[in-house]
Image (cartoon, protein in one colour):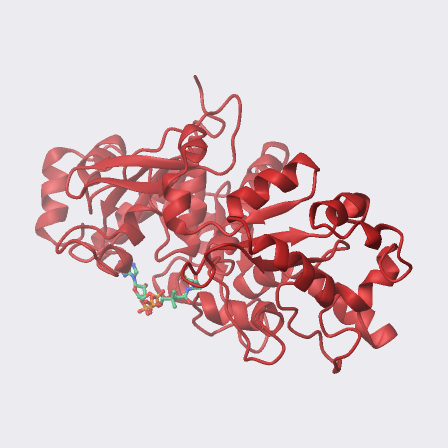
Length: 415
Ligand code: COA
């Protein structure tokens, strides 16, 4: 079966997490992704957070599936020539170097366009144009500058970063969409273009409901679905909302049986208005169905914390899975807090290819997250990440280099 992006060739100059997330997706959709790394060291993540000495880390393997790896010194004159050949040959160049690094290598947008006017040049940077455009940025910097940290955590504590890598992987996802869109536009124009995702912008895009709330707060001074309402203080900026839902249906995280010894014995409970009578019956509070203090969503708003505390008295008597089974019988939305251990062992996620077991020649088998975007006509087969420079000879031969030329490049340390 053909793949959606079959025939698209990607010169992958990415490293760490944001860029590799993007190119891994393109590879999963069928693009030929050629990852360019420095000989000897490669992507820094190959050696970071290693669990087996001398073997590519899970950090690297889990972000670089289905790619080919070539080594190339982009600052060596002969290496630059190879890079120019690659630029002429590929459709997309993806990079997430520090600002200006590609220019310093001699590959400005103008130079790339001169080599290949159809080339799409896609970049992740920490910030867009402005006062911080020259800054190097990692995940948590983006979470802090994109509005996530100031709105995450509890009101009486400091800002908190989230475990979801919304700055890195979030930016990579945004960039992949930009690339595919630019490829689509190129069909009509015949021209390449630049695609930029700033990590701050990607995080802010994912936090747009908080900018919504900022404006609601400025207009009304309070936000009734926030836990600060009705007895706490609102300041001038959107406060941290604890575990409030962020949408129109109130929710909170509640303890379940075993919470005192198991850090994940909790469930997210949504007190959706449509199923309020069912909630009251399940927790044994039928009188709340008609009681004027509880009968309507508006009446419940100032009492949400009291309501959730009462529901918790019930959830604490059952395991999170028992609670879920019962609530689902009545269409009451809820979600058990699943640990990574539970997720890794979940058979249904294995069945859909969301969790995949991959065989690697040096580390044996390991688990990874497969393609979360499922295309019915372009199924994803997750193939292991490449060893450093595993495909250098193969790719150069495809570009027309003879074995003697490849040997000469190696002799000069250009590859
Ligand atoms: N051949 C020759 N030189 C190479 C090379 C190659 N194959 N690959 C990389 N380099 C060089 C770069 O040209 C650069 O040289 P320069 O500083 O002389 O211009 C150098 O390696 C280091 O690259 P840099 O991107 O600065 O790496 P870093 O480790 O110092 O910084 C980041 C890492 C992530 C902070 C930085 O790349 C960055 O801010 N990227 C954009 C935002 C981003 O994606 N952040 C999230 C990462 S998950």
